[in-house]
Length: 261
Ligand code: 5RP
Image 1 (spheres, helix red, strand yellow):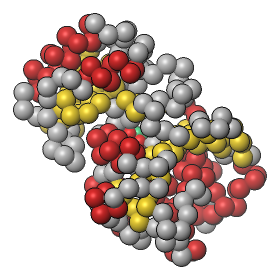
Image 2: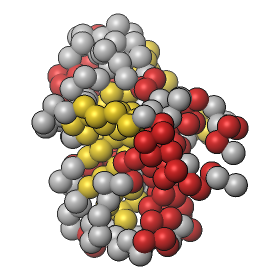
Image 3: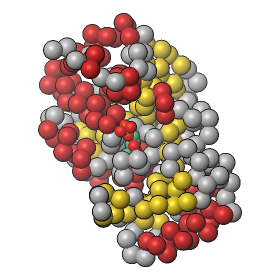
């Protein structure tokens, strides 16, 4: 069955499965959102069944919460958990300092709150998500529905003074209607092409009335687990600067165990 996966799917799958090994008994774990995070959630469900792993999961979206319950992860709210040992989540882009763009799946607000409330954030991504400079992926910004067009105009005006290459801002749609987040908000996608000063931009965006949060995750991520289409996995740790690579054969039995039939 693994032969049916595209190289990108394989990359996401192996990164997610490898990162799920960081989870230990007794941990409170932030559960990310997206196709890569879904594989990680499924793997934790397997570990609960097979090994009796004891954890509590805090989902970053309604969709992840539903999947987590389906696969048998005990789910609690962030307020019930209080603080988390670890959050594992996907990303739309990451750079060499592990700064991220997130929110392609529309869950950036809960994702940022959960990741910030964790001792460690581990990002799981296929190798294509790595960039020299953030910004090719449109930057998602969550805004309240009231006066969203005014908020968009204010953001466009603010972008004129920023170190970015593009300034167009679009409302994310789902069919004919605006995409609605789990908090009932809208998402504006900022087509910036290149973000010269992410720190400055993040501060300025969050000053605009109507903006709830932006998708720049700066100084939040500690480790990146990068998957490749050939099944290789690279683990990079920002804190100690280490880089480890698992070849496909090293963990093949384990990584592909649920795809064996
Ligand atoms: C959701 C996110 C996702 O983590 C991001 O979009 C990556 O998704 P995928 O793993 O499907 O490529 O930020 O808001």
